[in-house]
Image (cartoon, rainbow, N blue to C red; front, side):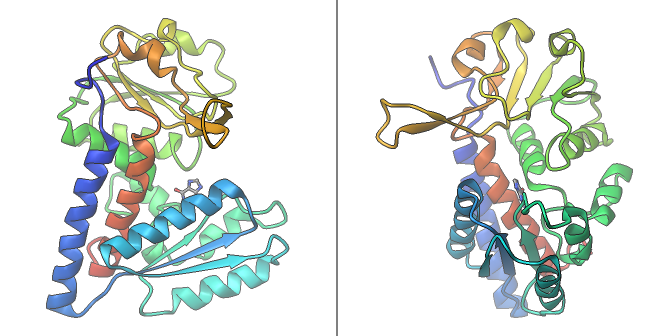
Length: 293
Ligand code: GUN
């Protein structure tokens, strides 16, 4: 298997982080501004702990000021709201990220809406969601933003292409659909979800297929068209007795099965996942420099 077809998330994300690092140094030397990002993690979900830790490390590498708040699972909604209000008014904090999912007793919508949309580097606040849909300047959710960046840097044509997205989450599927619909990407978009009767009927027609459903190796070669571009958003941890950790990460696409039929494909790990963090860094820098709002 040659690597020509592989869309290298490691390479692109490190290019982006280097660009952000250079611009961060420039922002500091010219304007004395150091981008600040605050993380809030509620509870002890192991995957969320890893994500937040990795995001914090990226801030360090790039030269951002960052603070991580880890709150117990039993935290009341009002305590969380108070912390959000504190950061909304903190001049040294330009980006505020509340890691999802939140414990069930906390109203996620209320929390997201409490974040100042000018600091919403996740792009989840309705103000940013609405602006994304209408094609206006806004913070773009990091994972779909990262996918767009991959397409651009690999010169993958999107104009007039059939894009099929499997999954309709607020974090990936819906913002991804909005982005492909915008004039700059100009694609024809179909979104499949749990109530879609026959996903294959749509996926077979995809020039670009985005899999974001959280089902390990769901996409098989029988579901894709010859020469399709395959974007795998899945990060599924499965048991693997042969690996030292006893587990390993796999995507929503059966990579080995789909490789030959695809024209380009993202691996897991080493694909879309790394882009999410790189774009969070980009959004935070843009928040600090006032480029968006
Ligand atoms: N949970 C899974 N992905 C994300 C993300 O991009 N941002 C936040 N805040 N939570 C997540």
